[in-house]
Length: 291
Image (tube, rainbow, N blue to C red; front, side, top):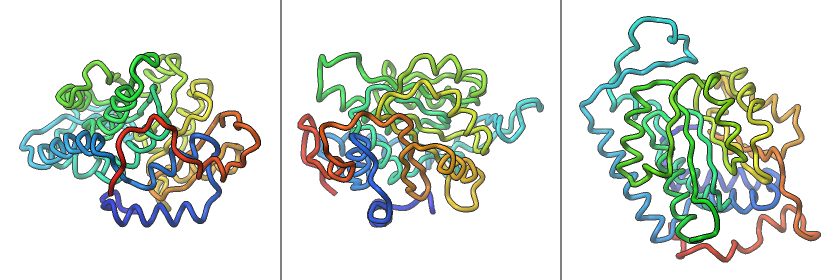
C-alpha cells in the first residue's frame, strides 16, 4: 500500500478493512474508528496546517543531513552517508494521510504518554505531539501533561527533528532520545506505561519482535501498538504474522500499519466489543470534525 495515499482513498480503504475485521476492544475500538474516519475539527485543522507548512519546507529544502542506519549495518563503517533532506523526506517521512491516522489514534485514546521508535525528520512525531497538545488543552489540570518520547539512531536526523518539533511549539512536550534502539529502549521503557507505541524504525522482523519484548511491561491497559511497514512483501510483515499467530492480543490490519492491543482494558459493564466500538465518543472532544 502506498505511503502517499491521500485522505479520501485512504478513508475508503480503511473503511473496507474495518468491515472485514473484528472490532478492537474498549477505548482502542473507539480510537480506531476515529482514526479511520480521518476527519478533523477546526482546532485539529489548525494543528495539522502547521505540520503541512513544515512538509512544504522539507520538500523544497536544499539542505543535506548525515544518516546513520543501524538496521542496514552502517554503524561500524566510516563517515555516515550524506543525503538530501528533501530526499529523506520523500523516502522516509510519514505521509500526510497516515499522519492524520496517527493523530486520530492519539486523540481517540485520549493519550498522555506516547513512544515512537524512529523519529527521522520528526514528521510522524509532529502529528503525535500535536494530538497530545490538544488532549491537554481539552482536559486542563486533569493530570501530568502529555509527553512524547521518540527514539532516533542518527544524531543529525535527531537534531533536525528536535528543531522541527520546537518550531511547532513542542519543545517541552517532545523528547528526542539519540542512539541505537537496543541501547536506549531499555531505559526509556521504564518511563511507561505508554498509551500508544509507534514502531517506525529498524525495519527487520527480529528487531521489531525484540523491541516489543523489551516493552512488554510498559503498555498501559488498552494501549495500542502501531507497527509500520507490514504490507505484503515487506520484512516487518514476518514479525506481524508471528505476533498474530502467537499472541492473543486483539489486532487490526490497516495495510501499511498493523495495530495490536497488548493489554486490553477491562470491559465496562456487559457491552460487547462491537457495541463499545460504535458507542458515542467521550464527551471531552472539542469541536466538530470535518472532512
